[in-house]
Length: 109
Length: 116
Image (cartoon, rainbow over all chains, first blue to last red; front, side, top):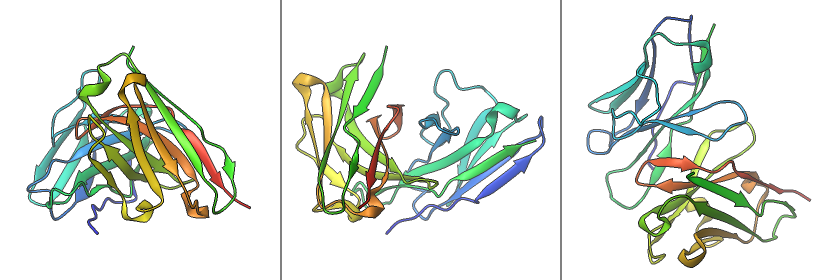
């Protein structure tokens, strides 16, 4: 079955740039999406279609893809950005094999 | 206000059944696919199933195929997840989400606990 892979944790100091990666063989052909989940809350979409930011998401959140790697970047990370971040995508078959990455715990302190 | 509200979660014994419901409001329900996602305690998110606009196309993660059935009633702006032959490993918070390929609106979730 298809998988996308994320690092388990990333840690930065406030104001620094945080980068979270997501690796998947189908990413050159399929969009990556990113979700933020704070403790005890439902996930929130922060990036769709590789690099687009929904309304209401701060500009410090950006993303890009290159080959089989997608990267979520938080420029000038804030304490309130501390959360779990999940990459989401599908394989190249078109058979609705949607998967989340294992999640990355971002610590900002 | 765009909103999704799940219900139906409960404590059930292994082998039992449960039906989850999700009621949508504030948007044209019939225009959207709908998806169920679950999260086991202390674990990550797992895509479970989705259903298209008219309910004729349904997809499932391998681990629930043959046990879970997703359905919808567009007249009631509702999507359902019928869960049969429940296993301990199905214990999770179950979220429904509005699906445009991304999932831009989520409910708060309903908790399913499978335990003897």
